[in-house]
Length: 317
Image 1 (spheres, rainbow, N blue to C red):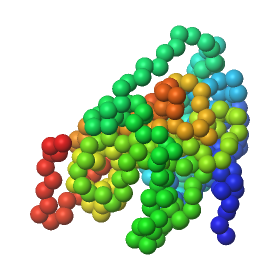
Image 2 (image 1 turned 45 degrees about the vertical axis):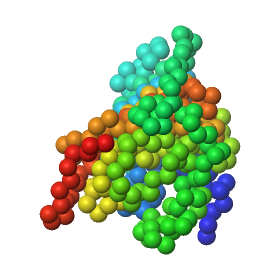
Image 3 (image 1 turned 135 degrees about the horizontal axis):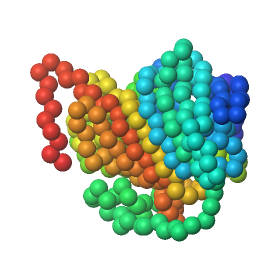
Image 4 (image 1 turned 180 degrees about the vertical axis):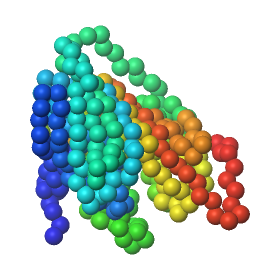
């Protein structure tokens, strides 16, 4: 049975939340449920968002996350629930630091440290970079294309459904709760070298709760979509290439100001370097009005497994 869009949206909001199992003064245990998106292993954005949920619950309702960093230590099993062990490392008047371990079968699959702050007023600016689609600066401010002019990933993928691996096909057969509209669509099987720059507009298709925690979890969830892939753009391989082994190693987000995921945000991304079998990418979430909402960075494994006689030289782009 195919769920309605409203049911899928409610399921996603519930999915990025975790249930409290045990609570002490300075620690807690929480449980998150996994969804298999077709890769067999847990989607990294899921584990990050759920770990953030555990940190938010332990910190309490008066704190807002302003930064977290995490390391992916092992692949997660998408058929198994994830247990989150959270501890308060610091709890001052203005800031608190939470450490969360995501566990499966007694082993840590992700470690996250989040800093949360009691909201306060202060000096404020948001520097607006010029947006040049022909250079790396294109990743810094979204003003060259508006989301209403773009097609969604769902629309782009419809002509290719029959050729998509069967395990991944359900992901593209229905409209997902979070709509992603790429400024320039690059199929995941594309192997033509190109500039390491991309921009995705993203928004919930339906209105969401006013709970800012939910919006922060959803941004964390979607921030893992396409960021690492940017680091392979200059090379003659694709994210779905059989000779590429890709996995997140670390992921960081700084939240600059409140926002809503049911309003358009642009995740503008670029990769300044890749080397040693690792790719590195940076991103920025911008509002339509030009305010910087959040900054992201990710390092991941992009191991090239060359076929016999194959040689890939350093990109000259």
